[in-house]
Image (cartoon, rainbow, N blue to C red; front, side, top):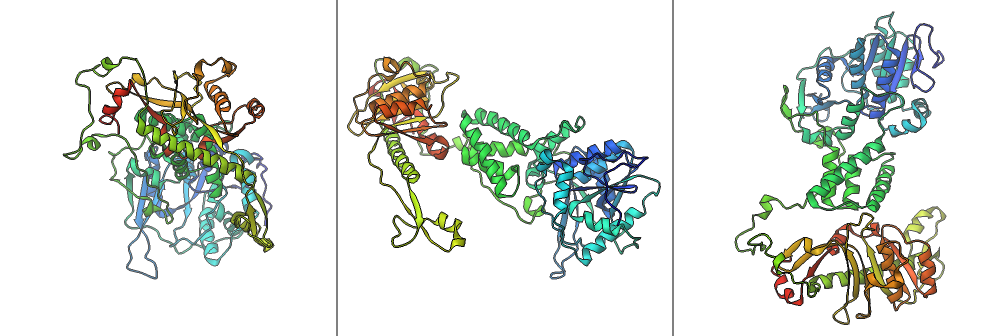
Length: 622
């Protein structure tokens, strides 16, 4: 067997040391993972660099006419459909095979680029019937961006794939086709990674013509509907459009980076989400999105997340509305049209893939049909003339809406319990079970050390003391969006004193004398009727931001040992010193650990212009 080498022939430009091609005589073998963008980019660069006279691709010769026609339609994506051979177990079962022709597929890119440079395209798969089952699990091609193509291929070939007589016959058929190519031409062979070694072995000796189909009946070329592309493509449509956009200018220094594309996707979805709902995605949510998508990708043995994981992460870190925008942005492919010279069809993921996952998104946006209420329901009141509600403001006093007070007080109690539980978990002790199960079996530690054959139990340290104040920061207000700052006192022994900053409530009226605002952050402290105006208190002048002023006040007014601080990031280290001098301890809870749905419910506050508005507020607020 001749030695594999990456050195160039005297009369041919061969791949560089990291090009990934294997050169044997006049043949250069370029192994790829089907459907993956990084390999499509590498194939295009290799063809443009080497300028071979023949480009052979591992595609069925019976699909050549349909495939070339589909390539001519690019950047519009096409689907080749043909009847599958009936299974032996059920000969009467009718099945169809779907083959997508999209820009990010390396085989499609090889055909496309070969035609651009005027090279002959050779379809090397003889189509000898049902393809043998080949393992098609590849390491994430995103690794090529960091280790290079040659090292990626080398690492894959270290562990050879299982061989069988059926695979050997299939490789022999491809080898026969390659051996029949122009003997004077330089040939670039684009073949699947899992079939590379069998083909290399088959090329070592002459092959006979295999028994194969010369043509297939019932082949159709279809135009997939734009709305179904996200379900059926290997690479999500927005990533493919990004590839198509930069394809002409792509070179070794400027390749498509999946994570940059993912960031651009999230930014586009953020803009649409804010337009449709008026809500912003905070910086802490972006940070957690990056971490969560990375973890989801690693759970699937990938380095970069796909469209499903991106959508799941968006729903978990924000809500269904944002997840919907992420899915829509990821599935957007401007070149695809509903009107075409081909039949336009909707193809579901179940028709193309064997193992599919489902996600149900419930988009909650006010629409025309939703506003059509059944007869008998009380409609929301509106102004008779513009400015009617604003004219009823007198500014003598303000107060809260009692039903909202109950909700936020209940959430404050929940945060106090959560803060103590987190502290208890930090101070817990895990040990092997001997005579007592202590506070219960630690299942995670027991499973992690299952090889030891022992059961581990956990003991929680009792936390002495209670939580006195709670601070929740939704937004640090770096752009001064939350200009309204006030302090109000609890009206009974179970209602906290509260200081908060928010948007100006009376810029958005929900009723006569009823303003609607959005919290940027708030402080709650019990017992009530003790708090001075936090925003005018000279003791807190050294605070650098509104959240820091609230935290200083929380430490100052807390009558118990612990202060809960909920925010996207922890306070500066100096606040630990300040709290310790006051015999207090700050319990930090990351905002991302709390339910975004619950946070959304408590973030809206209604400010009433006088106690008399409480009687009528129930007619305007739900």
